[in-house]
Length: 525
Image (cartoon, rainbow, N blue to C red; front, side):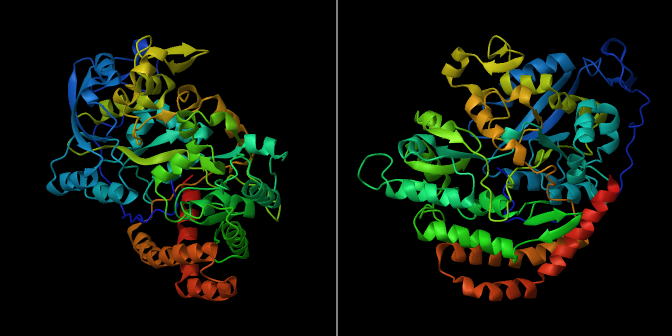
């Protein structure tokens, strides 16, 4: 899940325009048999080029992946497209350093695939002329991506520089279940203790108290964890929506009538932290919340000894076969009637997943090549491999075959395993991450999803440097003090001091910088 509290702040710089040769095609959408061409590149249908071409691509590989050249998607797509890919693979560990070195030495591939470029990198290397602008190429050679950008305008605002350039394209998620952490509650315990599913923050408190005090496992050991979450302040993300707090523009921001409101010092945030402090002090909230690692958290999900927690999937429960104990619930309603699924990720979930360099002699063909993966058909090939051999269709939806699942080779055949691949995750291709239990849990969240979720915007250089400086201090202070408020190391009598310190750290100025950037995004539309 994308976390708004990420420590690296994005600095982006003003991009200089780059003239693109060969982009102005008159070819529009035509049928595949008789598609328009430009320099030998079809604007629709396959092959993309009549005469085979070769492209060099630099990519990140996750520990679970096999070699890209052996993946059925790239073997089959080479035959379809007439474009051969020569991969340079760099493991996740050390990938960022290799990427930086590549740009520093100017020894560039034709494209970067699954590159996880930050907005800062995209604009830095774009303004240096090492990455080329993609907006005109998208208009002519990427009908699938263009359609998604037209359907979800927030995609465009998250990847466009203030000057109007797009230097990198994202992974896109239109299936809500892949954008949220579900709210899993132990229905077996509710049943045993004759409790209803909690609908409000007060009811949740009473349910957690019953889990703590009434021995729902029958072990007589008082060994249950009523509620847990990922380490650090993830719990704030999960519960914020019950107090009317959202995370827009990649930060602690509510957008109300186009006004940016950074809510860190607000009364609503105080109420949220007081509620979490009450849960923590009464041992209803995991006492290891601020020390546990991901592996410990996942183990707790599969233990069957946890009452309430948050996760995108049901995998850890399936692994230990305790999943029938759990059911997804709606966000609980807070003291002011708020009930928002605040921690939903943006539709453009993985920024900077693909970019084309100035070395590339075939930018039009490259854009056509990547665009296929923003269709359900292309995404199916990427995620599921070959029909019959790796997957079968049921009601038009691909599912891995039992034999292939038994082989344990799913992650070997697809670059989606390990995250960050440039492609579309839609309802049609999400069977593996969106099984029926997860779908049911998502239905409980759908009515409470924010209408639009804006990702962190691309700032101009000057704004970015100011934001970087301000947020370094503000974020560190907010994290430290919020943790202390929750665990009871800091009394809420000190809230006034907390507010005035945030003010001294120029929270108002930070808010104004976000406001100015948001205003310019609205104009771009």
